[in-house]
Amino acid sequence: MSSRRQSALSKSIRSALFRDPNDFQRTTLGHIQVVFSIYYIELLRYANILFQRLRNNVWEIDENEYLGCFEAADRVKSMGDLGFSGSTFFSTSNSKFLIKSLPRHFEHSFFRRELLQPYYMHMCTNPDSLLVWITDYVFAPYVTIGSLLRTTPAHHIIMDNTLYGKNDDPAKDQWETYDLKPVDYFYPQRDLVPDPLLNEKAMEKLGDRFEDKVRLLPEDYSDLIRTMRTDTKFLQESNAVDYSLFLVRYPASSAPEAVGRKNRWRVGVLSADGQWKYRAVLLDFFWARHKLHAQAMTGAVQTFNMIGRQGPMTITTTAEEYREKFLEMVDAMVEVDGDEEA
Image 1 (spheres, rainbow, N blue to C red):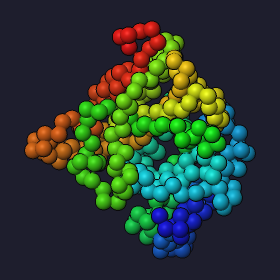
Image 2 (cartoon, one colour; image 1 turned 135 degrees about the vertical axis):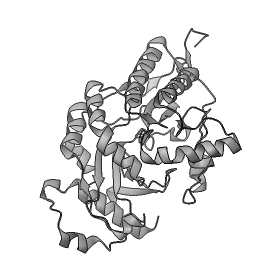
Image 3 (spheres, helix red, strand yellow; image 1 turned 180 degrees about the vertical axis):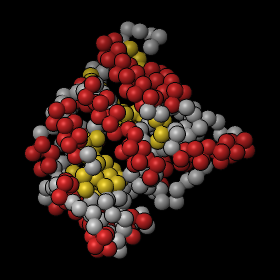
Image 4 (cartoon, helix red, strand yellow; image 1 turned 30 degrees about the vertical axis):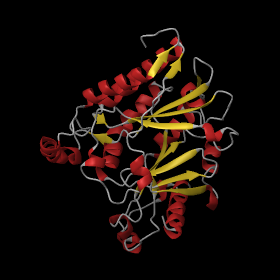
């Protein structure tokens, strides 16, 4: 990412968090003034009251501390274009929060129009949910040349960083991360329609595998599976597929800080053998099976599969089947202390 683009986008995001969206009025003159913008793009908060309630009431994130993470010009730094869909990532300088762009219409429209309100209710009802904490959503009220050319993304989510505390840990080099999905699925975003914008590092991280076992005490195993079943049931009812488990493990001797509510799977659960601590979060639940993009690709994928015989694919499966495979994956990677069959 160019330094000019990085600086402009960082400024746009920070400005959105300190601007009252109620003061904004969409006008023809305003649209004309920004339409030819290539890098800087005016952003506004979406559903700001809803997200503030989640931050303060459910996740117990101090509002002044939260805004302080974004206040100064050097508080938001680029992490590059790391996403498999061409997403742009930023981090606050203290690594507490991440900003991810949602460049694909079928993803950000699904989240705003269909998933956001149910997500809010699910989080209020299940405050220890493993779904990633989405703390804000900022978007561009006007179309610009930059957004049309995808030089400057127009939709962004802000979320808590599961790796917060790593940078201050003397054992940070021993931290391990895994982005896990059911391995028996063929991923068309890699094999059928590879995006030339994806860098090699991102491509190499497709299809992480956890070759070891997550060793848990019985009560920790029961807590994990119960929470996973609740969260994936919610995603199934929302017709979401292609989500992943982001698993982090680090030495048991480490004691990194955690943001907000002390959810044990965000603070770190001690392994049954006392060697590791685990963090776990569910990510990337923006692909809805019924959205136009997935429907349009289904015929192409099925045709390709007749020729390439690559096996089942995330965009042609059902939400129920994906949930079943996902839970099987989680269960298979866990070893319960004293239970050889786990």
